[in-house]
Image 1: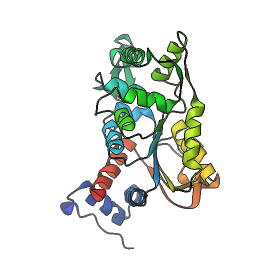
Image 2: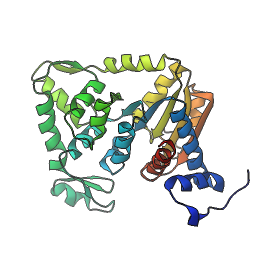
Image 3: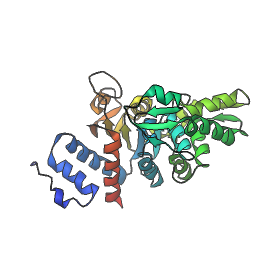
Image 4: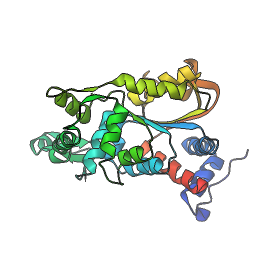
Length: 301
């Protein structure tokens, strides 16, 4: 295959550009092109597709990309962190604001503004509204709830601009293995001090077992790392590994972190099949991921 120049004058869509990335043969651009074809195959060949990501991107406009994927049923399940519930709920009622990585954090704290990278989140847009709504949504409920059940219970009360609404509407499971590491989980715990309500994580694991102890091909779109990434590939080993995988990460491999680990490392653990189609893209998911999904939507519509 020859290296082809990018013909920028003939780029009519994001998909045109992504296809030219593949033909250009240059570094990260080629990997984005490879990922687009792997993703297209996963969709067209009816893989069970997992999307995993850390909650930070839900505080950004990438929330809209994930919402569209769930609305269009491009993914079959999500594994994420509690902050996804937090931010999706909070942003359904309040606004987040553009900020700066270089802001004075002492001054922000004095003003009641939390900084998430270059996003500003006022207290009234986060902790206060989450406490109010969780008490409203779960105040009359008792029993044991898995994280998927909690997410859907919230989602059915949100608007169509939210991720959780479409997970509930389209019955797409969303699992939060560390749900107590965030505002929603903590508020459920607080309610549990007053009434009989508990979080039962084994409910989620029983549901996941039915997905992975199955012959259907399973693919993973993995943004960043952490527990969301690991919970997917941990379960994947009981499926003899993922059948296809796309990683997007800005973390380095050389520090030994899970976030920085490339797909090929997971093969050594049996978490990705030896013959699986896979690619690891180094870069910012808030840039690369929307490009991939815009390209995909162009191809499948």
